[in-house]
Image (cartoon, rainbow, N blue to C red; front, side, top):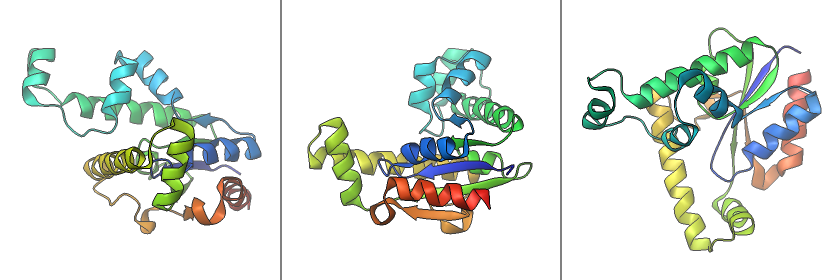
Length: 193
């Protein structure tokens, strides 16, 4: 097995938990928020800025001008380039699981990847947010709309692909149907073959 598993996911569908389980089953590294820390260290970006900016596409001309003193590449584009470099360096180390950050696209040409999209029903996702974040169902539904819209826009901007389109992935998993652990086992088994 020499594959890198990338997991793209709808917000609150369980993709991060599945990624951790897959990495544990296969005894390989798991990368999610670690990418933020490494990117911050290597690029000088503030980790809090990286986390906020990951779901945006461009920084305004005036903001960029005020920060840099001249117009160069927008900060969000610089951030995407820095994260892409970190993702490639992690993939160079060998098999791993990478969650989010357009990793399926970043690694599309040079790496042997198994790309997964994790999705679920609105009810499943709302129930997870209500349980874990202690929010009302209405608040959870609003957050889902906002996060999914931001992810869709971010993915489209940097990849020119449609986020969640099954043609971009080797496997799409519905966690409302399969459950988190069964989904992780299915992915680990397929990658092992």
